[in-house]
Image 1 (cartoon, rainbow, N blue to C red):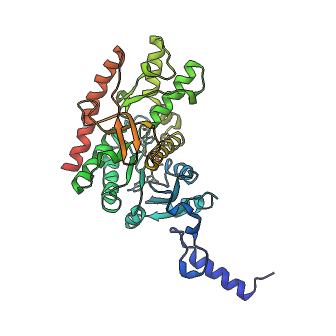
Image 2: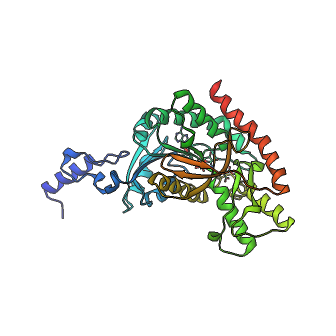
Image 3: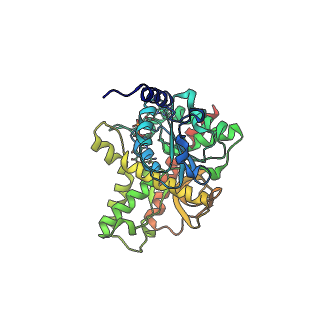
Length: 356
Ligand SMILES: NC(=O)c1ccc[n+]([C@@H]2O[C@H](COP(=O)([O-])OP(=O)(O)OC[C@H]3O[C@@H](n4cnc5c(N)ncnc54)[C@H](O)[C@@H]3O)[C@@H](O)[C@H]2O)c1
Ligand SMILES: O=C(O)C[C@H](O)C(=O)O
């Protein structure tokens, strides 16, 4: 049966108001606003994902849409943001989802955000180092951070784009230039190293990975990834062979995935999981939860380097405390010296990219 004239008009009116990529309905339409679902509009947090249509961005967007702490989720990308937004917006969870496509919509994507997560940029292919991504990703991160400085300078920023050891210093320098830099609010995401370390250590110990906590310090590339196996919880000890195997596997976890994907990119699903675990910790900190502690690559005085990954306590203002490394054994002390040497160069490269 054909719809009656009235029904046709209603359908036409509804279609006119469903206007991807920004899937909001206008108040004047007489339709109930899509935003009404965001009961948390005042109580939840507003989160933007920049690079939301990518291999990490899509599962990350899905998982953030499932997070009850999120009331508004902005999905920004230079391609395919409308499609991902339409898809994710059908999930019957609380957060309102809005899509933003291309540079001209970056500012709208960022205004009012509490947390901005950045997985934008190219991933590795076999044979590449993370530093080989610098030439493309440095410029992407710089532009996105200029937008953050302008539109949501108080937001917590989680940088995922590689090379993290350089992109975090780039972000810091952009914010410093703009006069908005707050080191407590800028965090490089190294959570995947911790997630991997917990998994691999649990395999060796034959226990549930959820019971394991491995501090991973330093940075996020090769030898700069320094698992502190002497500080694993629950307390345990490893043979020298186990220590070598675990350190190697944790430091090369990213390469293991890049090689297995054989040219189709790097870790995306485990990274989205790790990014959500980390973003959730940031949001719980913002909410005022006590005792939220995770590892991250941050501005730091733990070593003589200006940035270093270590355990940080998250709170209402971002990073509220940075923990010292604690006692290291001999092989960790050697590892630390190697890590610092490479880190120093990567940090300097990021800073001078913005300064030049
Ligand atoms: N920190 C970590 O532990 C970790 C782990 C895995 C991957 N990564 C890094 O994350 C980045 C993304 O990886 P991926 O697998 O999702 O890559 P991908 O190519 O699948 O997705 C990247 C997305 O970024 C978008 N993009 C490119 N330029 C942009 C811009 N100027 N503004 C907004 N979006 C833009 C692309 O359109 C694409 O959708 C890579 O640099 C990768 O090395 C980091
Ligand atoms: O290895 C990569 O290039 C991606 C990421 O940094 C990872 O650790 O998986």
